[in-house]
Image 1 (cartoon, rainbow, N blue to C red):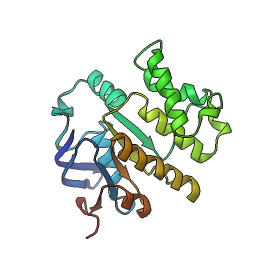
Image 2 (tube, rainbow, N blue to C red):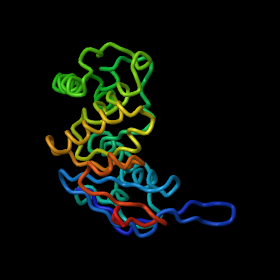
Image 3 (cartoon, rainbow, N blue to C red):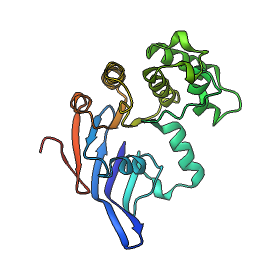
Image 4 (spheres, helix red, strand yellow):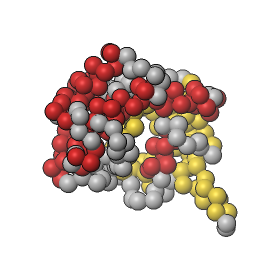
Amino acid sequence: MLEVTRVSKDYQTPSGPIRVLSDIDLSVGPGQSISIVGPSGSGKSTLLNIMGALDRPTEGTVRLDGRDLAQMSDGELAEVRNRRIGFVFQLHHLLPQCTVLENVLTPALAANRRVPEAVCKRARMLLDRVGLSSHLEHRPGQLSGGERQRTVLARALVNSPSILLADEPTGSLDRASAEGLADLLVELNRQDGIAMVVVTHWRTLAERLGKTLELRDGALVPGNQ
């Protein structure tokens, strides 16, 4: 499904380039769940952004269903980001003036002036799934941190993406809310077969996913080494 091959990433500085990622190889198959751990500043978010077509590697290739993302036009990449990949970030980026339901529907609105009824139905189903069916008309400011992040999860899934990428999804939550979100992620993977890659500092979440990798000195190694 998603294949990263010999990906490296450099950042330019006044004193010369700094290599953050070096020859990364990673494959994510249908229904697979992977956690990526590592210290702050090790490049975990950079790798996730490259996998999600939000950033480009300095070297190497990223393929989604066999298609090289580097060969796609800006319009094709926007379509991939909107419909094929779901994103969950630590900061929720919800629109404060919109309701919970409207926020969940924003990916569908990006592609259509009028949201199809089937997508509206799916949005309501997802919000029920994450325990927010009674909050459809609430604004983000009326929600707890855990409720906002569950709204983000529903938004990430509304277009039925092939893979979910989550960057520290529990990082800003209290323990109870974090555990609730972790339960949802595991359930979505095991019961619905949604493939996912989760960057996290929280070992409890990492250990509940199918495979753990550690980003160390720019390279990916098995998480138990």
